[in-house]
Length: 466
Image (cartoon, rainbow, N blue to C red):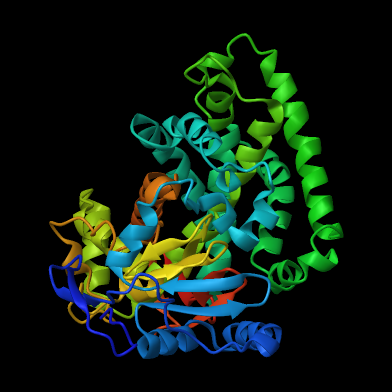
């Protein structure tokens, strides 16, 4: 419930679920939050950052319960942070004018991996221009063309999995999803060529989910990002592969007949007929590769962890895998993304003082939408901590009460692709394999850099059925 926490009277707003929520009436007041006395501000910012690194989302959720759905604190390397954990306030953030709340600035540590040329880190109108050019390969009819590629890659991966021995689904899923995205982006079929093309991207991906990223971003003012040999090597190798490939394919007279994502990007034209430069294509390939890999692999691992500990749900997905239906499988993925979102937050940076929820945050404040807290809001969901896929049967998730893909103009561009990929992979695996859980209880959530992963990687045993 959103309340003033200052002792003043409050007014009422209607939340996403139709329930009443109290809003503080004084828009000149700052939101409540952790203390940070002026002389000790830097020390407090460092202490709060360390507490989050150690305590993770459990500590953050306890603070949210204490201070309410908007709270503030200084955090080392991020400055002033306002944490939003309510669907009403999330809507205010996601629908704010793009010159008031900056989405590119809000990307934070991820920008260190995506690079300054990524569509993700652009502000408007450049972000929208690039987004429009990237949209066709990831939506509509294009998705159905990718299904055979996904199915074949999944079957090939299964042939290499250990039989009747424990292995980590998260590790297997990362390898599988990398193979899928490389084949779809570059239009290659040969396994060796796919591995060659994917290797430098994999190095960059591994840096993105390492604590090295977290530490280097925190120390970026000391040059920790500017001097990063591992990242420089990965980017150099990507350039050595991608830029000559683009130059070679520009000479292909039948380029416009090809349907891989690289060809579609090279042929894409803006409203004024302008095409993407080689460097822009290279940057967007990195964006698609990184955004379409780790989050999807982590979601697949979480889905297996939850399904293997909920046998009734597992049997229903297995039934759809054989019948071709998708309604319950889609509900399972939606519910997995609700209770186990792979990313804990998304953010904007206030370009000017921004009124929100009856308070006002200062210019320069990073406004963080806390995805887990919103996805588990008891005013939106009955028994919010339980895995209950049925809640999404016959209904679409609420726009601002279910935010694993973020929201607004910065909502994840690959959401539709990710859903198609997850449904397809799940159906192939459960139609052609038998899986059992190694661990008695569902996995605990652990933070790995900017991702939330199963603590033990979802350990499973596998046996092929065919």
